[in-house]
Image 1 (cartoon, rainbow, N blue to C red):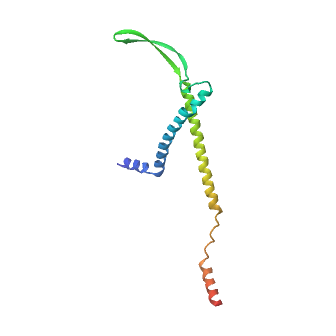
Image 2: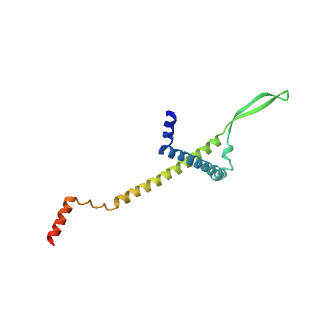
Image 3: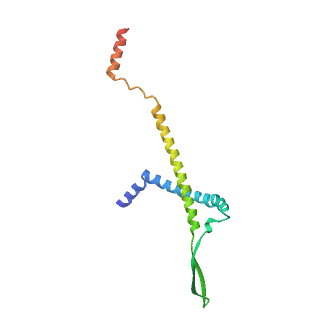
Length: 146
C-alpha cells in the first residue's frame, strides 16, 4: 500500500503534471510541424530542385530472390531493399523547424520576463515605515508645538 501512496504523491506533484502537459502539447506541435514540412515547405523545395518528391528519394541496396510457396507451387519472389534518405531529410527539416520555433518561443519568453523584471525595478521603492519610537517623538513634538 505504501508504494501506491508514494506513486500517487509523485504523480500529483506540480512538476510532473506540468511535464505531462508539456509532452502532450509537444506531441501535438510535432504533428503540426511535420504536416507543415511535408505538405507546405517540401513541395515548393522539391519543385525548385526539379520536381523531386523528397519522401520518395531512396537508394537501392540491391535485389534478392526468395523462393516462396503459393498455392502449393514454388515461385520466386524478387524483393528489393532501400535506404530511404528522403524520409530522413524530411525528418531533419522537421527537427530544424521545431528547434527554431522552440528557440523563438524561449527567446520571446525570456524577453518578456526581463521586461517584467526591469519594470519592477523601475518602480520607485516605497519609503520604509517610520519606526515606532520616531513616530511617537514626532507626535510629542507636534503636541508641544500646539
